[in-house]
Amino acid sequence: MYIYPDDPRLQYSGRIDFDDPKEPVLVFAATYIMIKFRGTYVKAYMKNLRNCWNNYMGVIVDGVQSVTELKDGQEEYVLCEGLSDGVHELMLFKRQDSCHYVVFKGFELSDGGELLEPPSLPSRRIEVFGDSVSCGEVSEALEYVGKADPEHNGEFSNSWHSYSWMTARRLDAELHDTSQGGISLLDGTGYFNGPSDLRGMESSYDKIQYNPFLGALKPWDFSKWQPHVVIAAIGQNDANPVNIMAEDYDGEAAANWRARYKAWIEKLMELYPGARIILTTTILMHDPAWDRAIEQVCGDINSNRVTHFMYKRNGAGTPGHIRIPEAEEMSGELAAYIESLGGEVWKN
Image (tube, rainbow, N blue to C red):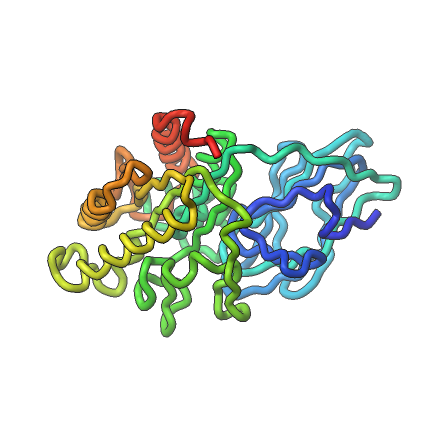
C-alpha cells in the first residue's frame, strides 16, 4: 500500500516546504511526519540532499527509537518490519539541521495494511530560534558530559534530545525548532555557511530554505503558523571571529549588535503579535557580556511580552555541546519558567 505525501492522514509538524505537496522538503531539525497504521512493516522513499556531515533520520515506532542513515540521492528505506498485526504509530523525524535537506516521496505499508487517522497535534505552540545547542547537536555523546566535543561526523546529533524538544514535550506543545548549527545574529559572524560567506539569523529566520549550498533561498510565510511562545536563543556564536561584547562592550561594534538584536526581536513581535518572547542563551560556556547585552536590550524594549531568562548555570555549564542529561536540566528549568508565566500565555 503506497501512501503519497499529500495524503491528509499524514501528520506533519515543523517549518516544512510544501510548495510541492507531493514532494515536501524537510529542512529544520525536529520536523517530523507521523502516521498511525495497521501493518507489519513501513518503508519510506526519500531523496537526501547533503551539504555536510553524515546524515541521519530518526524513527520512533510505538515509543522505541532507532536511526536510519541516509545515502545521497533518492533511496528506499525500511523503517520497521516484523511488527504485529495491531495498530502502530510511527514518527519519522529530522535529527539534524540544514547540513542536509530531505525530500519526502512517500511511505509504503505491507500488503493489507491500513492507514488510520493520526492523533491530534498539541494545541500549544513553541518556536525556538537558536543555534546547534537548540538543534541537539552532539547530544548523544554521553561520555562527554561537561567536556569538549569528541570527533564526530553527525552521528551524535539528535534533535529529539535537544532542550528545545524536551521543553515542548514537558509542556505538551508543538515545536518549530527554527535553529541552525553555528549561526549567530549577523551575517559575517558565527560559523554557519563558512568560511567565506557566513550567514546569520537576520538573513535566515524568515526563510524556509536558507542554506545556499543546497539551492535557492525561499521565503517563509509566517501566517501559516503562529506560536504562543518564542525562545530567542542567539548570542553565543556571535563571538566569532571577534568577541566584540567582551572586548569593548561600549564600542561601536557591540552597540551595533545590540541595536540589530533589538530590531530583530521587535520584528518577531510584529510577526507574532500574540506571542510571549523569551530572550536567553544556554549553559554552553560563553562570556557573560553577551547575557548582559541581552538584558540591556530586554530593558530597552520594555514590553511585558518580552522577558530575559537565564539558567542556573547560564554560560558556565560545559565547554562542549549539551548532552542529554544537560538538556534535561535546561528543559526542566525552561519549562518551569514558561509555566510560571501563567495559563494566559497559551491563549490564542
